[in-house]
Each structure stands twice: as structure tokens, then as C-alpha cells.
Image (cartoon, rainbow, N blue to C red):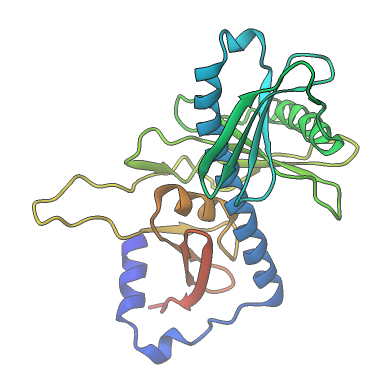
Length: 273
């Protein structure tokens, strides 16, 4: 179905591609939000990965000193903070990134200000509440690895904190499109029901074996049934694999969107035959 849909679109005359391609104001807002969230998820996830490597190279017996981590800041320059095991957590190690590169990483000294901001303390409480909600709902990642977690900043209007639970890649050649969830935590600490971005544990080959003619993958096509527009998971996934993802949505009509890194374009209608 995925390959057929794309083939039909490419074979359709130009006039047909312009039909039923309208996007509502609400959909435009949803795309903009998904794009911003997806870029932030990717930036925070990358900061956690590379910052952890740097921290482990500098800290002996980290398990006795570090309780966890949280990232903050904009997508272009995120900061990763590992915090200690005190009842009120304090920063232990801080790494600063810029445009995907580690700029600095260091263990804070005893005389430095290690207090976490009120917003970050709220985010850590939200993470704890979301963890309970995920366990109670019986939500599990796809595969044998544990979830990667990403905590977004406090929403400036609603005060809600969104926590993502992401199934990691099993290897560089495959990408999981299933096994990703989000939990919204209200300002009073009440966690909502985990929201699934897919109905199944779908894993797709994104780096096929090398061919004799040198052909390589140019994109991935996926059918998405749960939303009328691409989500932040599609944006995050495209950034992660550095390939476009062609997202076929089915409501209100079949439409094909292009998610290329941090940019979502389209949609183009898919002829129904």
C-alpha cells in the first residue's frame, strides 16, 4: 500500500495533484507545533546521547553520584544537566551544545551555584508522574531496549509538561515508527493517559544493503492513520535518519506530506482509484 500510494501520486497528472490539497488553519497550526516539537525532541535526544558519553569519560562511579538527566534550552543550543541524588536535586554535570556539536562539558565544583531552576524542578516532577502513568498503563517499548525519555519545556500558556517515551533504534539500518508515546502532565502534577503515535510496533529498513550499482535509499514512505497531519515523531525520525519521510495520511482525504528534517511540506493529494 505504501509503495502503491507513492507510485500513484507520481503518476498522476499535475492538475490532479492540486486537487483536495487544502490545509485548514487548525492543520497548519498542528504542523507548526509538530515541527517545533520534533526538532526539540531530536536536539534533546542527541544531547543526552553525546553528553552521557562525555560525562562517563569524566566521572568515576557515576551510578553513586548521578540520579538522571534533563535537557533544556532551544533546539539550536540545548544544554544537558545531570543531577545528583539529593531529595531536592542539584546540577552535577553540565554540557552545552551548539548546532549538534558538544561545546563544553564539565562537572560543577562544590562552590558553584548548582541549583536547578523552578522550571526544571517542575519538569523532573512531571517526569516522575509520567513514569508512574506509563507503568500503570502497561506501556512498553518495542524491542528489548528501554525507553529513551525526553521532557519538553513547561508550556508557557498552559503550564503543561509533555514527556516523550521513545523506542530507540535497534541498529542504524532500522527505524522504529511504533513504540513511541507522550504523556501530558498538568501544572498540579496530574499525569494524563499515555498517547500512542502508532497502533503497532512497526520497524522499517532505512539503510538497505549496498547494491552493486551504488543505489541508496532516498526516503521512506509510511501510512499514518491516527492524525490528519504528520506528527513530531515523523519530524524527529527524519532528523534521526537524515532522510525524507513521505507520510500518507487518510483523513479527511488521502494526502501525501513530505517531512524532510525540520521541514514539513505538502500535502499533495493521492488519487483514489
